Amino acid sequence: MSETDPIAVSQVRDALRELSRGRGPQPHVLLIVYHRQGAETVRLNEGVGVVIGRDPSADVAIPERSLSRRHARFTFQRGDVLVEDLGSTNGTFLSGQRVEQGILKPGDEVVLGEITASLRVIASAELPVLNFDAFDASRASLDPGMLPKADSPMGGPTPAGGLRAVNDDGLVMRSPAMRPVLETAMRLARSSAPVLVQGETGTGKDVLARLIHEAGPRHRKPMIRVGCSGMPAQLLESTLFGHEAGAFPGAIQAQEGVFETCAGGTVVLDEVGDLPPSCQAALLHLLDTHRTVRIGSTSPIDVDVRIVATTHRDLEAMCEAGAFRADLLYRLNAVPLRIPPLCERREDIGPLAQRFLQQASEAHRRNVRSIDPETLALLEQYPWPGNVRELRSAIERAVVIARGSVITPLDLPESLHALAARKRSTPPPPDRPVVEVASPGSAPTIGLKAQMDRLEAEIILEALRATNGNLAMAARRLRMPLRTLQEKIATHGLKRSDYRDGPPSRSK
Image 1 (cartoon, one colour):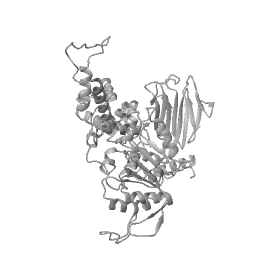
Image 2 (cartoon, helix red, strand yellow):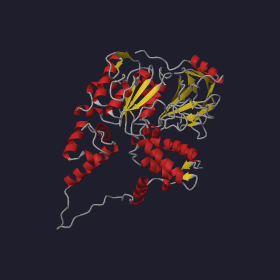
Image 3 (cartoon, helix red, strand yellow):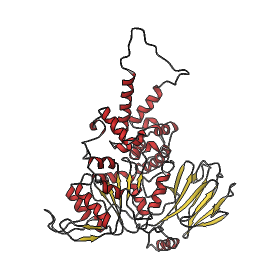
Image 4 (cartoon, one colour):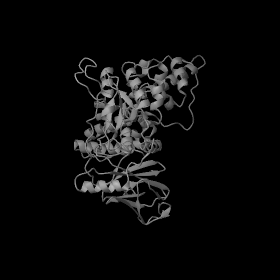
């Protein structure tokens, strides 16, 4: 499939002219700054300069020695992005040449000391409010109406991991673990190949799917998200593929399916692992032939859509169990993307917490401005089984009940209180190891091997609970092969009810 640039410079200028006349959307100009600790993504707004440097007063402060305190300024004005060197020691280089001033084009890279800044331009008439709770609330239903109009221009640079709208939960890229995810997503955006986004619940799979759509050639077409879990099989099949009048009781008139309605756009299949077998077969046929057939019809209909699927399940294990088609997994998994859990990207916890604090303070009209160092340390040490969603809820709670303008450990949920209590009650390690010698007549109540087996079972259970029973993700957490994990689960006699919430899934 051909690859196209998301948008040309001339298109940006045309869009700006239309915006000034009140007729067009504002393009979204993103500056991605790569550094040793990961990456920062900043949205540039018309006429507002963004200063990059190592001084805390800089708009984007990066603790990099090769940067000057205020190294360079980037300004988006009249359709161009201007870069200005601010008298830096190590210089600003554009196309290999040291410059005092220069004009950036989409895809250009600027070297500031030893870091690189890359320009991306994305235009869209519909920029969503990326909110995890909103996604969860509509998980079991078709969601084509959750596409608000473009947000109004903001007054300053807006840090964002993907695209930032009002109150979004965008992807923060400070962690080195997230940099390859963003880079791969931006490359994938230019094609129309199917994408499978994997990750634990609450990591931001829907946000990444939106970024892929907005950054690609289909950004002017609709993006429709369909939740595959919790919907009756016949209703889901009708929603996706459409039906003819009289196809089933209650089908009074013919109805287009999502794949027809979303012509030229992107369909996001949320929790694709919950697709019933009939839908799996129809989806595989669509991917192979680019055609769909409505329920109750034999006439194929040509469709042109891109499919982005998301899941927190172990689809490989489901294939082995016969609950998911292996051939469909091969087609969807042409370009897999995995979002690491929050416990693997602790560098993102601080920036995310600060963003959620600002959002919650505005939403609840509270004057809470910061998080004290002890509280931040606790946030960074907590395992966050609920990932970004759990972090956002914890910060929102803290903002609501905080007594002053600073969040303290007392404002955190009980689970984090328990962590703080354990830290306070644990004595510092002694200078020398303490060895307890048993009396001659005594015997250990449990042998060493039994203790080690019990510890191993507890560690495996913790990983399984943190991933809601996703064996592949648990194996990655434990850094062991999937088959080894399955053998150990059987050896220890662990049951599904020990580590899964709710009833067992159809994969077992």
